[in-house]
Image 1 (cartoon, one colour):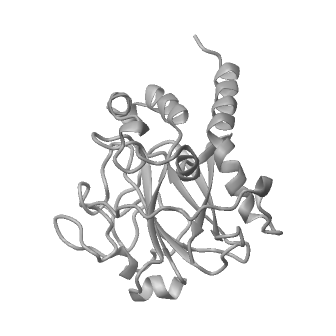
Image 2: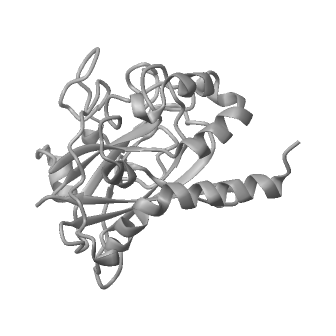
Length: 253
């Protein structure tokens, strides 16, 4: 049986391997706004919203807009809000994100709406219609930083593990229905997902789905260059009792 020490060692090694490409981008959020190793920040690619955005733009079976609901501005997105029941259960993850402009300068004051599926692969308000968890809005601070308390998502059939997000010029703009500056997605590291799916029964068939749908076959991330894919992959570290993930989102303008 693998010891806890060995599992921790594997986490560190996997995080180093998967995070090398993202490490340079993470440096964009430094106080100096310096570029790492002289490499310029790449603008984060535009990706599909998917069918379950709940941002008022559409989706199936009906348009829903959580950005018009009381309480959507929140750090902990695991519980439902605005009077709806339910809480997303799964392995805890603190997702720390840095907003930057091309050239690595921090983007203060912009806002991010983030949503994802739960451990069973369901999206609240759609495939799980009785809840609105795992959706929230945050404003970037003076250093361009914001955070969400969430869970590792499950892997459902046809997609690699991921989360969705939209970036707005401001918190007020997001709440008033302005168009986002960027719609995109972030991927989760395969090694951490495999480890979690293998030992946590709440993730059901996620491991089998991941076997059938590696990132190379994913219709969003599969055609990206190694550099862009590294930028779109969350770097994970372990901090008991929850994981910590970091990523940088770079706006083209």
